[in-house]
Structures are given as C-alpha cells and as structure tokens.
Image 1 (tube, each protein chain N blue to C red):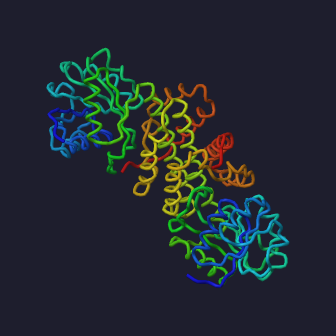
Image 2: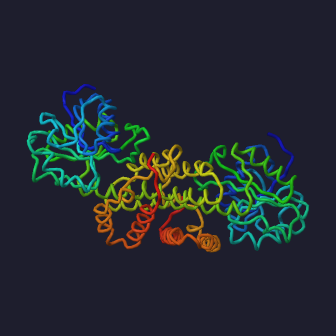
Image 3: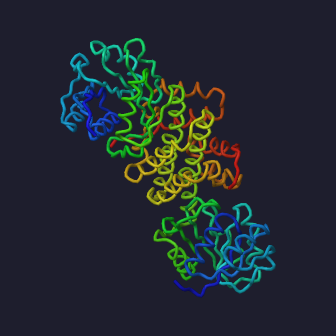
Length: 263
Length: 263
C-alpha cells in the first residue's frame, strides 16, 4: 500500500517500536522519532532509518499525523507542546485507557488508535492478528485512522472512549493478570527444581480452550470442584509465601462463586 | 502399538473419559468401566464399546491394571475395595495432588500416572502434547507406566510424590487461575456489550510469549509500569464489583513486587 501521509512518532517505548515498524512496513512514511530519552529515540530512529529529536521544539511541524505513544501519565502534560505550532495536523494516541477528549482543549483534529496487544521489545508482533479499536472527532479523521488500522490488520473495530476503557481493563485481566499467574507458577516450579517448560503445553491448551468454550465452562481444578482437601493442602504448602497464599485463597473463592454451566 | 495388558477404568469423569479413549486408541485393551454414577459409566462404556458396572463388587478381578480416576476426596476411601480380591494387579491413580503411598496399606504394586492437562468433556485432548509424570513402587511397575505414558506422549518425566504436589499447585496457577482471569475479563466485556472474541488474539499472544520470554520479563500493563493513574481509574470502575476490585488490587500489588529483568 502506498500513502502520502507523513507520520511522526512521539515516544520510543515498546508500543512505539512495534507500531512504528508496523506502519512503515505497511507503506506509511515515518519522518521522525521523538523521545526525551536519547538512547530510545536513537535506537528506534536508526531501526527505521529516520532522524530523531529529544526536544519537542525540534519536532517537525509539517507532518500529517502525530502518533503519540507515551506513558499514560505523561500524555496529558505533553499534549499542549505536541500540538503547538502544528494545529493543522491529526493527533492520535494509542493508550486504551485515555479518553479521546484529552486533546479537545488544544487540537482540532484528533483520535485514538488502540491496538489491544501486549508489546515486549524483544518480541516481534504479528499485527495481522491484533484487534484495533479506533475513534476520532470527525468523519475524515475516522477514515484516516480506519485506513491506518486496516493497513495493519483485518480486525478493526470502532469503539467509544467509554467502551475502550472497559476493553483496556478487561485486557489487564486476560493478559497482564493471566501472565502473572504464569509468573507465580514459574516461581513455584523453580523453587522446587522443576522446569517451567513442562508447563507450556498446559498454558497453550488453556488458551486454546476458550476459543470454543466460554471460560466459565472451561474452568477445571480444585476450586470449581470445591475440593477442600486439595485447596487446604495447597494453602499449607504456601505457608511461607503469604502473598501467594492470599492470592490462592482469593481467586479460589472467586472461582467457586462463579456461575457455571457445564457443556 | 500392541499390548496384552488388560485395563479397567475406575471413574468416568473428564480425566477417565479422555484418558480411557487415549489408551484404547494407543492399543491397550480396556475391558470394563466402573462408576457409581450409572449415566457416566454407561456413556463412557458405550463410547469405548466395553461393559460397565456401578458396584465395585462387580469389577472384574483378572485385569492387569486398574486405572483409578476419581475425585481426590473419594480416592482414599475407595482404595480398600478396589484392591480387595485383586491383589496381584497394578493399581494406578492419576491425581497430581495425591501421594503414591495412599496405596501402601492395601496393594503390593502401585504407581501414579499424572497427565498435567486441563480436561473438559466436550473438548478433544491431543495427548501427544501433554506432559506425563510417572512414579511407581518398583522397577517393573515403573516400566509399565513409562510404556503406558510413552504410548500417548513424547513428554514423559519421572517425578516423586513431593515434586508432583508442587507441579499440581503450579498448574493450578498457570491453568485454573489464568482461566479465571479470562472468565473475569469475559464478565467485564459482556457487562459492557463487548464481544469476548475480540480478546482471543491477546490471550493467544500472552500464552505464546512465554515460550520465548520468562513470564516475569513478558509482563506488561499498568502494574509493572507502576502507572497509578490507570490503576486508580480501574479501581473506581470496579466500585460495584468488590470481589473483582480486591483481586485487581492484590494481583497488581503482587506484580509490582516481582523482580523483573527487562530483556
């Protein structure tokens, strides 16, 4: 795909790295990278073969789209300086939890492009299988964002800021918290001289299962069986790990409260 | 593979159904199914084309292996009646959390065959990708169990009862608890009119990631970024869901306590 839209990347973290590479590969023209951290700016810029800057004053003023991918906490304070002198451009952030109207006091044309995915620097992302959620403050802006998302993935949805907030929180449970369960599992195995690798087939099957079964109906294990003997034994084994012990209790309780329809 | 070993299945739940079909398919001779619940016994027996009984007195006495796949809570009380009159046979249970020596007062030849997997009745299991952990009270018995496991999967490990207990608990975290995070995510989405299906690419990637990255290093999201704004907003959104709110807080705290080495 070819496009004449010129894009500046604001930020050089995990999301910026993957999305920057993705949009460039999809044929969009990335013209500059900004990050206040020189090492990050330099690394991403050299990977894309474009210049970088570490001060917002030096960000070029003639790009079409400013794609802002910074920590949620930083976004709001950055906005006035990103927009200043570039009022004609389209401003886009990628943070699932930030509402679109963070832009409304400064910019005229703005929107959100939220890729619901987990990005780690060392791991390639296949955008074709990523769900994108877009929102914009005008029809032409929405069309640009749909085009941008569609150049990366087939799974493009419109979502309001309110819906996106819930999507983001649901993703924290399904991704960040599920991953932490893997981490706790790895900790228990390693402490007992057992390889985490032996757990991978089970992790894979647990994820595959919910493609065909609702997770409530896919649930197995002592908590859903209400097998108090096993659960008490596990709690005893966790006597020296008070944090894990509380997590075990709380999640087991929550599982046993869930309504379930075996299929 | 051909074998002249005759196997009786004691139990007709999820594990018995999948493992019974698996061993029959691998060439072992399943001769009978026992379950005190007639409907379950009948269903599994007819699927395997073998007779069933609902009383332990009627279980045949001349099988080589009695494969006991009942709830952990029931196993111990069942053992004397399973062994009585069949003292020459090999007795095997499949429960990860039960030690091998539950058999020692009644039987002479016994062991454990633990398939570390999540079994749901309506879902086929591909045993080739399941990790099996075996243990027995004698060398010839261990050989039989290794042969049995190896006929189903390449991933056969020896594990002591103590190791298996930790494996089982680690599996509760990586499988049962991870699945509950999917269930809570589905609940939040459904409550807000959003499809759980949009979450599947993220769930898949979260599982795939830990094949190459340690889960601690694969962690993303507000808790590991220590992004208090986002976390406080999520906690506000969960004001009417006190259980989810506590789970959110506790797991986020645990993530932020984890040592992490970005790679």
